[in-house]
Image (cartoon, rainbow, N blue to C red; front, side):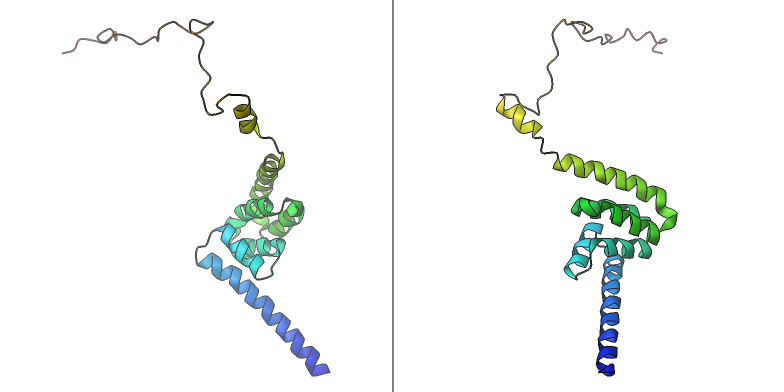
Length: 157
């Protein structure tokens, strides 16, 4: 029974090392942060652990990993930030700023506002520029473009 337990423990440790090698090798292969996180999840590594591994492997990638992971699962934002900060403490400011950006992006994405759809339904083109009011206040009737030769410069010679 003791041998079985030791064998299972060794197998578990080996699987953890293989998972770490996968994140590391994905980074070494130049994969995008999103692809590294996707591959990690496919290997059964949760986002928090994957971000920690990325930040430990290359601290300069910690902030980008935080943004990508929070965009995948905003509910884990605080755990993701904590793991990245612990793995790359010198990047704490960048990680914090990245988390704020990611939280704002997640809030916008989940707001449910369909401004373009509402504008289109109202008969307006949401991509059209706002037309200027001819001779409106503060808008000259003609553009103020100097005529050729009246530049006020010196002699042409």
